[in-house]
Length: 207
Image 1 (cartoon, helix red, strand yellow):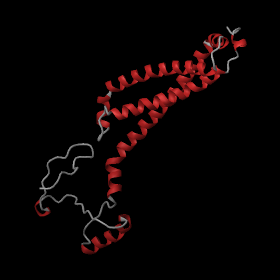
Image 2 (image 1 turned 120 degrees about the vertical axis):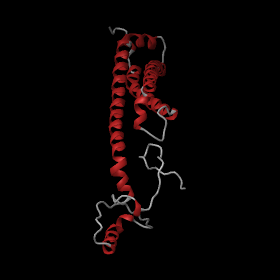
Image 3 (image 1 turned 90 degrees about the horizontal axis):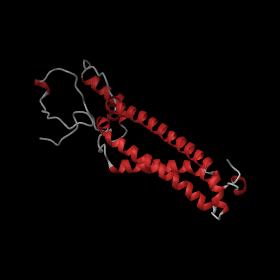
Image 4 (image 1 turned 30 degrees about the vertical axis):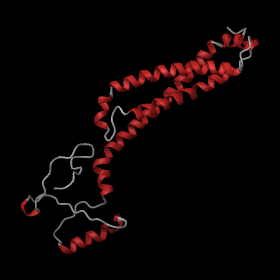
């Protein structure tokens, strides 16, 4: 009896396995694992030479480190998926930035007359800045809640693509929501700063 080890891929539970002497099993490909104290890549040539000297009829079809083996057979697919999802996530954040900036810039342009009246009645730049950011935060909060609800509804589609973490991991959802809010508020800053520079005398004549 030995401890469980991954023998069914990286993300699936181990399957039952029985070790048998090679003398009574089929003659399929065999693997030899060698533990080294130093850089394992440097001894591959000498290891191949030693095996050939012991038995010249042994064909070595594939040698390499365990890292390279895992990279080719197990990590390549998940890494490609990670790159694709990261690219889509980056595009999504860019769309959030552009969308929030456009909406807030348009909203500020519609409220130029109102902002001018507020400033003429004594509102300070900080008051105007706070008003615009509050409106932007409200829009961002609504969009973020709707997005998180949609993400929760689609978690079953992601279950097969991730392992080692729950598809509904609260820390992941919290981090994503915080990132979106930060990006959205950053996009709100430019229209908000522009709103604080409104000249009350000019804005009162603005249509």
